[in-house]
Amino acid sequence: MEIGMIGLGRMGGNMAQRLLLGGHHVVAYDQNPDAIAANASNGATPADSVANLIDQLSPPRAVWLMLPAGEVTEAAIAHLSALLSPDDAIIDGGNANYKDTIRRGATLSERGIHLLDAGTSGGVWGLAEGYSLMVGGAADAFRRLEPIFQTLAPGPDRGYSRVGPTGAGHFTKMVHNGVEYGLMQAYAEGFELLQAKQDDFDLDLLAIAKTWQHGSVVRSWLLDMAVRALAAEGDLASLASYVDDSGEGRWTVQESVELAVPTPVITAALYQRFRSRQPAPFSGKMLAALRNQFGGHTVRPSEP
Image (tube, rainbow, N blue to C red):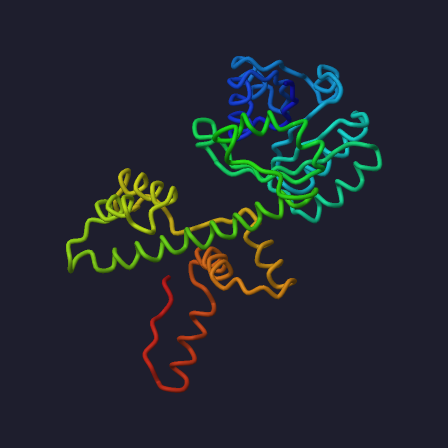
């Protein structure tokens, strides 16, 4: 089966390579010529423009986007909509906001073009392990493109599904990432508690993490990643306590407010990421000032 790939960053390039290894014909385009060349060396057919990519595909076409959410994806879909024909399909594998996806899908459907939103999880390990794919879109378009999803997934009978109409894939991936925030925060807090008692008990965090990998109810792939990190640097001294967020955690919390569905763990995990970026949070200074005002408690001067 043939497919166009637009966006050949690390994840997009790995997905293109997995499709090539699965016997699919991939036409590849990226604004970075080096990325095109790298994928061409793996067997992809290079394209020097989006129009050239479309010209090299046979109808009904399928074009997979792996681009940042927001204006970049908006512009790419608008450009493609002017070049594609009825029954062609765009697959958005990025982390777009599901509300944008619903809007884009409605606009494309007026031209007879399908939009499938493929929430994609797997990160840098997807090439070897396969990707978890949460796909939204019309059932007939999904069935036509299913061989592509089967190749990208961990197996032809697992790790992917059509979760609903257009928008459902990105909504499901948004919730998936919210759950991921909570799980990561729980591991982080647990290991911090262990580290705080390390001197008293001579705790070996790496040995404990490895123990939890087998038989424990908290074993998981994320725990495996913790083992890798601790094995590389037991005290993580080279890392700053600064954690970014891609936006999906915020969307998850915003959605929980709109639906009045409590998500205290996910919300707290998101707020912890915000806190990690503040070297001297004002709220902490206010707490110190209040204790000093009402009780005369000692305060510490700020660092110079």
